[in-house]
Amino acid sequence: MSTGTLLAIIIPVVVVVALIAFAVVLLMRRRKLRERFGPEYERTVEGADSRFAAERELSERSKRHADLDIKPLPDSARERFSRDWDGVQQEFVDRPENAVHDADRLVTSLMQARGYPTEGFDQQMKDLSVEHGRTLGHYRAAHEIDTLSVGHRATTEQLRSAMVHYRALFDELLSDGGQTRHAPA
Image (tube, rainbow, N blue to C red; front, side, top):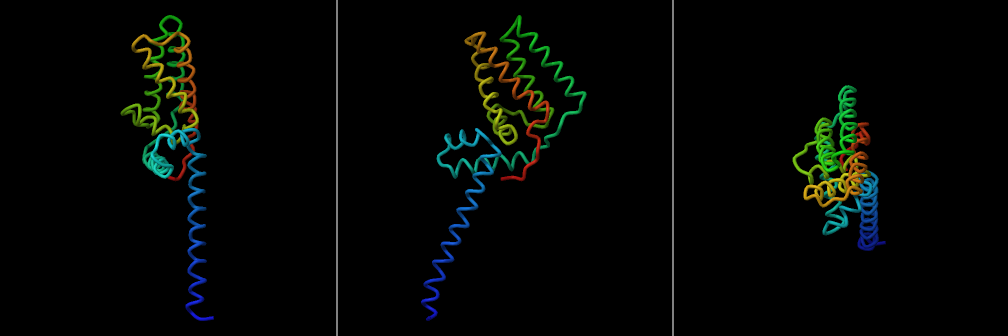
């Protein structure tokens, strides 16, 4: 066989193998992001211009998160936050709107104590999504109801629901849920 014929066979084979390897790497990356972010993966993909852009955004979140100093709480702080939550729940009986606002502030305070930046709701959502993607929907729903309650437009049932939603994230943050360290995706 001539050199030209060999090159005509080898080059396409190398290109096909490289494309297959590239596709496998992309699929593995996608699977890793899906596992890590849970429902937040699909939510980000739906809100992005493309799957590639969404996956780039999620990878950037992972890198930012890796630079944060997220830490478990000492037992004394954990107990204090638990007592504070009990107080917020008791407040709900007489002042449900105030209790929901206080629950929001308590969750934000807990985030800050754990080392999460708290510079704004959207950034909080992005930072939390890396380790708490499965409970993030609770936080989003609670925040929406809290916003409604500012204008006194939330029903008592909605306020009760907000407390349940805040509690889901609160419990996970308090127990260091999702605290496993991952390498950036």
